[in-house]
Length: 151
Image (cartoon, rainbow, N blue to C red; front, top):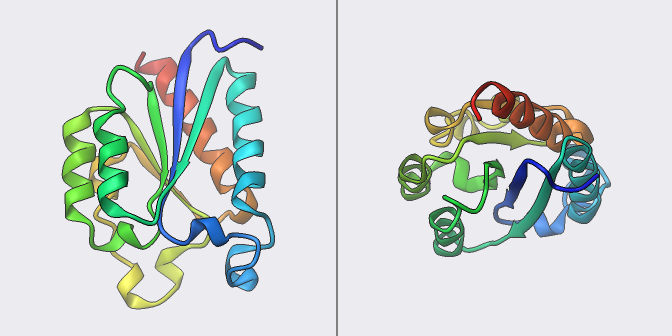
């Protein structure tokens, strides 16, 4: 199906390039490329093209957010550890005014106490967490449903 509704950005933070080998008991055995392929297939089925960017650098991630307005209809974001402390990312997302769905493969609220607070949640339309291999797909589905109501 052609991208009739625009583009979504799947944005991935630090260490997510290691998915598939990094703590498989927590994050599963799927690689980032496999997560992206599944999410992109769902997005494309709804008429959205997908770009995917992964960075271990906070400044690069902020730059990608700054470039998002006018290019993307929404951002599906797994900010990794940036989730818990990167107020500069929070401010960039708030300023960009592009809807954001926060995604986590694991459930941060069920992990170490330092993971319990998200600085991304206050500037997101919602959060999908703890659904393992389905988290990115559910994040895309949530974004698509949001965009139907808020074009």
